[in-house]
Structures are given as structure tokens and as C-alpha cells.
Amino acid sequence: METLQLAFGTVCALVWCVNCLSVANCGVGKPLYLTPYIESGKIKDGRKAAEVPPLLDNITSYSGFLTVNKKFGSNIFFWFFPAEETPGTAPLAVWLQGGPGSSSMYAVFKENGPFYLDGEDNLNRRSAYWSQKLNMIFIDQPVGTGFSFTRSQKGYANNEDDVSLNVYNALLQFFKLFPEYSNTEFYLTGESYAGKYIPSVGYWIHQMNSNASQKINMQGIAIGDGWVDPY
Image (cartoon, rainbow, N blue to C red; front, top):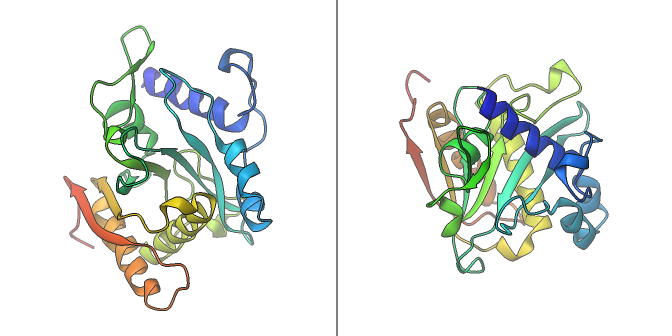
């Protein structure tokens, strides 16, 4: 538990104070809201703000908050790792942790992400991880999970439709911030309680794609150790 808390604290420092030269000299500041950059068309500025200073071996990544419900002040946190090999043609995958209520940062540091902490809490590079071959987005969801938050009790999800709408809105904003991935093969992945999230989000994307001007090129889903029943 202590190692996970340290890892999450590292991410928090990077996202909330992304312009600091080092984590050691960085206090926790204000959340990095990327939605205003997107809505004002300042994509280049938004991407620059979202770029995380390299933690290890110059691994490129981007992170921040996407506002999915302005009325309730609901914001979803993501951490994006472009593929290290052929990012322009590699598929794009979203990882959703289970729980419900488990942060996808668990996967970043304990499962398929590029980092892990050794017994002395030193940050290390994993020998094999998904973003070597895939463009990976790790999302904290539903709102209230991990770093994702809302300013109103009414901003929390009450059902899978609420969950799916928020994730869908976050994805649409992601593709505006990173338009080069708009036509990339897209996959939803996750484990455990994500066995409920993933089919619901996938169905939502499928339904919205029929009439949406901005379509998501979803090609499939992958669920590990999924809880799918009872619904």
C-alpha cells in the first residue's frame, strides 16, 4: 500500500504542477484542466501543458483532467503513453481498472504500465509493458475514482449509462487534443469490474457513432478476469 501511495503522489505532483523542473521541488498546485485549451482551440498549448516531464529513461507521456460535466464540476483524470514503436500506426487502447472504484494508476505501476517500484521505493522501468507496442490511455473512472473528482454529489455516476457518458465525453476531448489518433484502431481494455464498464462504454460508442460527426474507430474489447454477471 505504501508503494502505491508513493506512486500516486508522484503522478499527482506531475499533473498538478507539470511545469516544475523536478518532482522534488514541486508542491501540489492546481489541477491541470485541459478542456479550456480544447474548447478555445489552443491545442498546441494544451498538449504542451499536458506533457509530463520524463520520469525515467525519457518515456514520453501526457496527463491532465478533462471536464465531462460542467454543471457539477466533474473531471476525469487520464495518463497517456504514446507507443514507443510506430506510434503513428499502433492501435490505441484505453485501460479501465475494476473495483468498482479502483484507480487505473494501479495498472500503470503494478501491472501493464511502464513503471514499477522496487522494495526501496525506487522507480524502475518494467521490462515488458503495453505502451511499447500500443498507444495507451489509463483513465481513472467513474468520477470519484483515483484522481478523478466532482464538486457535487450529483456528479457521481448512478448507473452504467452515467459511467459510459462520462468516459465517452472524455474520449471525444482526447481525440481533439490528439487528432492524429482519430482514425487509429481503438480498443477498450480492462479487468475485474471493468467487465461491466467495458461492454457498456463500447455499446455507448457504437450507438453514438451512428450519428456523431466525430466517430471513434472502435475495433474491439478485451476483458481480463471480468465480472459481467450479475449485471
